[in-house]
Length: 268
Image (cartoon, rainbow, N blue to C red):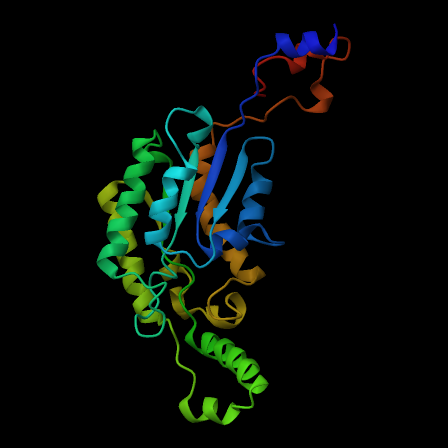
């Protein structure tokens, strides 16, 4: 059988999709050792894992772009699982970071709107996982990171005395991040979707998350990525458990007529 004839005879292979939608924690998740890369490795040949992470974004901005990312009417636009991972930027302090900061009430409303849009385009609530803002802000590490940045910038203009006279203010506080985490959990409960309270888990039993998981006080280290992966995978696994390996294992190939193995629906 010619190659072109074989292609005609076989049905199109549709790869299921898992979608990660979030801020920098999601965008950076495909880096070496990242939680997204680890999840993609677990799901290889079962589905495509798409990273739609937007570093620095808040829920006001993502509410605008979501309809451009997922639309109704295309089977490829109906992922088998979606993680929604926002809040670290929304919870910035108004006086120190007004551009990213979103009031708590609007944050909750934006999360609800996000879920409603996904439902309206055919993604049922059973496929959604809402995670609290992660990580819980490590203020000591964040202060050190911001001070180092200021030292570098002010050193260039010989104004170090200015820095040490005023100190370096934080633009996020873990207490405030916690308020947004609780609002996130409430939205998930109201919408009937799964939620993962990573903000609480990372601080459980007084764990020292700061030195090992959050080197700059906000973004995840390799150990932090391992922590996130270990807690998120069970939720993802439940939603993709019915997915089969796409195309047969090479040892199972029909040797004389491989098209018998390769031109079915692809699931094995």
